[in-house]
Image 1 (tube, one colour):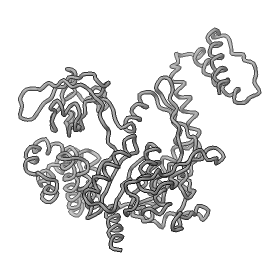
Image 2 (cartoon, one colour; image 1 turned 90 degrees about the vertical axis):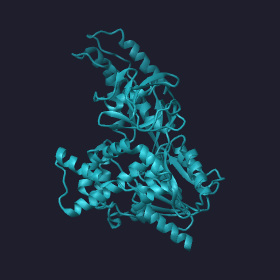
Image 3 (cartoon, helix red, strand yellow; image 1 turned 90 degrees about the horizontal axis):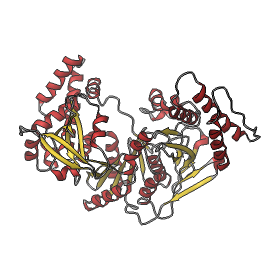
Image 4 (cartoon, helix red, strand yellow; image 1 turned 180 degrees about the vertical axis):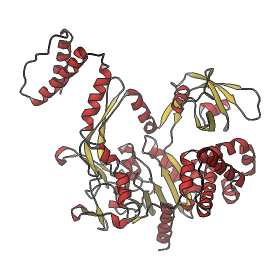
Length: 536
């Protein structure tokens, strides 16, 4: 590789002394790899020096890298420096900023909650505050993009930012000088007792802090009497392999194979085994998955299934089993190059089939599954006998060929939400109504509901709020129910989700999911399975 690098440098130096009438004449090489590299560099130099219009060389190089990677597989990618930083923040578990959860109400930033212990909370910023200016630049009423606003609020740790705050009940604009700090990004969305003795932990990715967060959640739920556990990986797109291995180590005895990776020609690159001393190696376990569960989520669910450690419930997972090595470039950009494939303990390849260079078909796979009926009918899913494998403890039949097929299939409920409700959600009518309601009633609700249990048992969104949503949607977008049945079902959907959104703003996402999951068919099936296991 060094030899190729030296050739590249020599050619670039040579190109600096030729003019537009010259051409590069290099000594021929018998090595086809050297010839290919020489050809690429020659083409880049010629375009840069001879093309009729000015050329952005950086853009040309980035396009060339992207083009080369696109011909390999769907997961080998290039990201520029800015996108690389954005991509890594959720996985690193922190970023530099002021520490607020916020949402946009029309064109104004409204604080949902300050991050506990963060710089904004320490300075006295409250839920419901409106941030109207940053460093004396107005951000409210000017139709500034969410990304632009975030870039103004974020900045290096230790730097200061001046915020203009409008607070309900106070006439003047308040000024807060905030010193930015490291802000933790949590990947555990919810941890609560879903039924007597049954705990539920939901996490959205596998980041640098996910293992510690899951450990804390298990300890917390054990103190509350948890004997059985639901791990909710629905919609979890994966993340760090190491985080998945650490979490599975909390669930399996020491020394059990979790996953192995195999490179070119099927040669094993590495294998990962449980480290022992896990917090939850004996209790009953269920893992929830769906068609958006991918990568590290599939490593976890595949290991649990192959060792007969628990029951996988839901729908077939995405099928992302290619291992990428991040290669950082000197300008902060990154190549994520596929170097191996993941295999479950029984030997199944997690990666679904793909055609090289055909990213469009690969991206349409979930839609194609839906059209084939795979998301609504388990009988629509067919596996050839060549992909049949056996679990390691009980010898149950499982299948390879891409993704993890659950032990218990729960179909996608396409009738759960009405057409009108989906359109109201897509146009943010419901979310905006929740923000308006909380803005006007936050203090009253905080005084009225001292506990979440009390809120759960008695709160109902007032009918006039629902009526206002429907009237506004009919006036602005001509959205109306087709008949009374759709209207009544839409009102039921709205009440349920609005209650969850209010709970989120009064407490946190754990309370939100407790409400939203109260009638979720996948969670209900998990509770049913674990309750029956306890009785047995």
